[in-house]
Length: 329
Image (tube, helix red, strand yellow):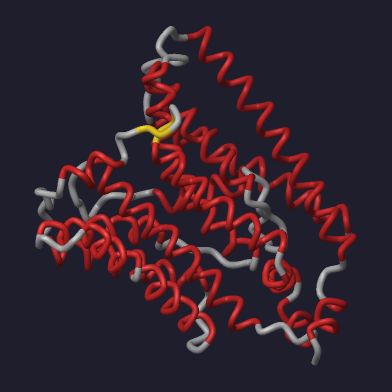
């Protein structure tokens, strides 16, 4: 089947345009909510709108944004990746071990990034060849990879990384933290891939109706492999940056970040039912979650409330999405 035929039978340009418009409106709504929260926190505490606090907020939000972008690709296909937090922890450990062994920084980073394609391919293999649900497959690797990280370190913290590596995440470029620019490096190609390539249309097609996509000539297997590789690679990259930010390698780093990435993607407009989502969404969702966490700390709010607020946001947004879907039937 020719590529033109496949394009005709995958989501139409009009449908894709409506999806982009809807995503744009959701992003505007989220941005408006974020501005309101920032204004409120500026009045509620003198320390929120300071250069030091905003920089710290951007650095933490950058790490969550990177894994949320990768998670969005998976969610758009109707899947889920619960292992990203464990990949962050394993990657921060591996890069610390390699650097402590005097491997050049570029080589240590390159080798650690390879964890992403390996883990992502393993996920896709389990889902496609073994018939395991994405939830079960990635839950299993969440546990296994966390254990592997602890095994490599015997539960200890890895120190002794080069100052150049550690200082990288603490520097600024053009007045903005370097971690912010790392988000730009991830978000720009991710946006182009998902919204302006034929493969991006395949991702939406698989999430909308995998069987119809297959009959249209879409390689579902290739699409699934690539989205899970993308998610795991983003998590591995975030793990490397985390090791740079905290200056040590800890296997337990990133605990709970899988939930943060899912929450950021969902709050940003991605549908857990698949076929809906955009790249700006998880970026704004990550900033919103980071703002809630940062604001709660500045206001001395019990940190457990942060989880309650995040959980409530997810329930409300998924419920609204379900109502929207029901209204279409």
